[in-house]
Amino acid sequence: MKPYTYSLNDIIRADLNKYKDIHMPLKASPIEQYLIKKLYPYRLHVNPEDDFASEKIGPSRTIINNYVNQMRIFPLGKKGCFEPLIVEKMYPDGYLIINGHHRWAAALQLGKKVPVKIVNLTHESDLDRMLSKAENSRRAAFDLDEVIFCKNAAEAEKPLPFPLNLFYKERIRRGVPGLFNALKKRGYDVWVYTSGGYSMDHIDRLLKKYHVQVTGVVSGGKKIVGNSPLSAEASQRLARQYHSALHIDAEAVLYSEGETKTFRHIPLSASGAEWVQGVLAAVDQLDAGENGTEGAAER
Image 1: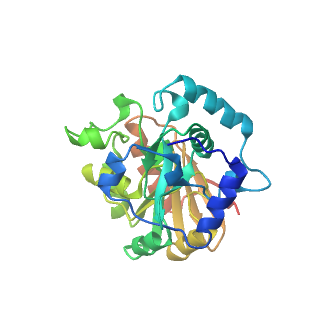
Image 2: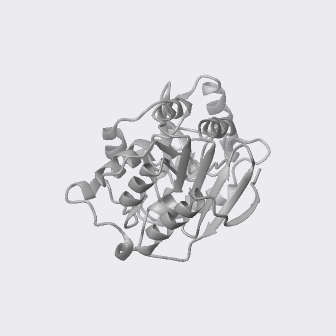
Image 3: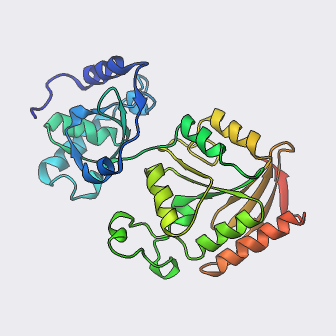
């Protein structure tokens, strides 16, 4: 592939105009997600919702030039700055960039292939399907990136056996399968969300390998609304389904009620394997109506 000779702004505007109002997300197959590792930049398209495409903000020439200089020295995919671009398959062709526009611009300038990670993000149609499975009027929500995934092997569940561990490299916090099951018995639908560039279906399959089933998996780019990568409208639909919600992180359990706009907050002091028991004790305390720290819910 030859380097582009047109100005970057012209390329961005032409790309946005070509797909304006007609592009839509498509689901990539598992084979596409696992086998496609590099693509030429002309197959990748600018995300109209990203600041990179904004006429007021736009691309940073300094960042692009830094990537260009590094790409001339190091092979693609061998250094941290060349971590795969997060992309989503799109209609009518190619892939929409979710994260990595400046690396794309540098590769475009040099005419080089760029490493990619193809993901299936959560969209409105997926939310409809997940809400149709709702069994309760209460939900418990977890951040996959900060809470469920565990980098400390000593505090994680055993890795999946070979060859599954080649496809599912993420480790989950020890005790999470039992915790999710206990929450379901207490009348909570369990939802997990991530902005880490994971495929929605990959997360669903991974959790099932650990004998965990959840009601909803919400995967998005870096855009976060409230406590999940969903649009404001989608978050409101969740609020209509669930009159109350638990938001559980590593340090606290937050209980909120949709109509009263109030919350109760119970800190967690336990770590490691004791964290699960601490979460369940806090949930039981909240379910019994015992107050933690009270206040007005964030709007």
